[in-house]
Amino acid sequence: MVTKITTEIHIENNYYLSSKNNNNAIDLAGIDTIPLSEWFDTWLNALDDSLPQANGYELSLRFTSDREIATFNNQYRQKNQPTDVLAFAALESEVVSPLELTEFLYLGDIVISLDTAYRQAKEQHHSPVTEIAWLASHGLLHLLGWDHPDDYSLKKMWQKQAILLKLVEITD
Image 1 (tube, rainbow, N blue to C red):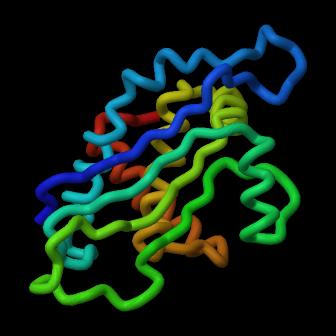
Image 2 (cartoon, rainbow, N blue to C red; image 1 turned 90 degrees about the vertical axis):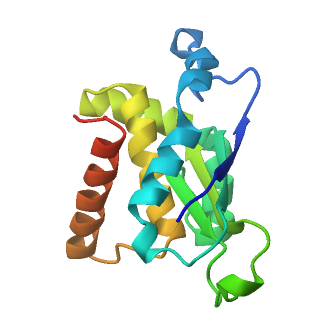
């Protein structure tokens, strides 16, 4: 069903970890080599049965710092702390019928803190690319209506994420 996925990538310039130690600077050069659009296209094709019908899908992906994501987290979730990923779904209301669609269906926005992603990658003993994939797939599932209000729901979501990651050849 998916004919094209458009992914808008925002990367801050001169990005550094919140830490004052410059030895912890994040090298963003590798971010450009991550096949994010291909990942989302693969994932959306795999999730096709659960998607509203559309000519294509669009989402926005923003990489940011702990400082900025904490601002968003406080503003939208009333939690005054950084988090790893936030998703702002555009599909909260009913979707127009496929016959009326002439544009791509906008799914929403995903925001990932690179500070937290790199920290979690180190804690989990896997690469930052694996962590970014994990967070991006988690954000996508949120855009599509998945939630985890309890441990059971969270485990189901993690299982779905593991399946999505295998599709893009990321295993850990």
